[in-house]
Image (tube, rainbow, N blue to C red; front, side, top):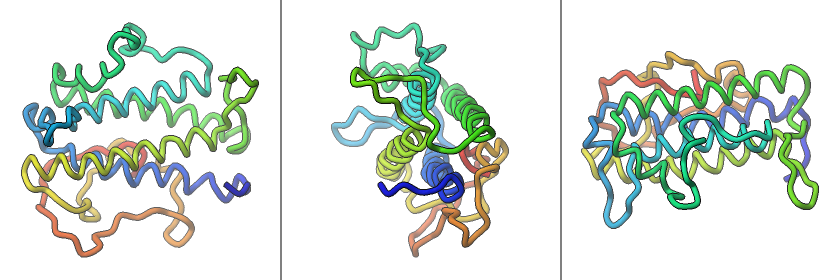
Length: 217
């Protein structure tokens, strides 16, 4: 990837994460425990499992790669070698509210770290984690990893939610309640790199549930 200035990338990267996060939040909204535990075909992935897995990704990425420390609860008591898919499987034991809050709180911790880092410099600042070859990830790399993760799982969420109740498409603009506003400080004005949701002519089933979207206002 061509090197670009701090000013060119500070806004688009978190905004790009917010677009996929908004899609996932919408596809996981308004469902009871059975809906969040629904599986598609032979896959064991569920919407609840995606929420818990993304919470783990948020915490582990910034704790391990940026701070150089283990992730905290509930991840620090898990035997990951024995149960590498614990976050997916254990989600079936959680109620919907627990899963949504777990994800939202993990994003809040990530945002706090990013805000602190960017208050003292740019995206090229290096995290504490060091590879065997002596390399360290910068903040840009960590955010790009999150974009990749969220984009992948947004596609999973599309298919699973449609199989539950037929909901398709993207969130109609303006229907989400962005109460947490996790990443509002990073959003550009339209035309300056902001990633805005669009309908692209796809059909929607109107939702009345209140949805809180991490990474987005």
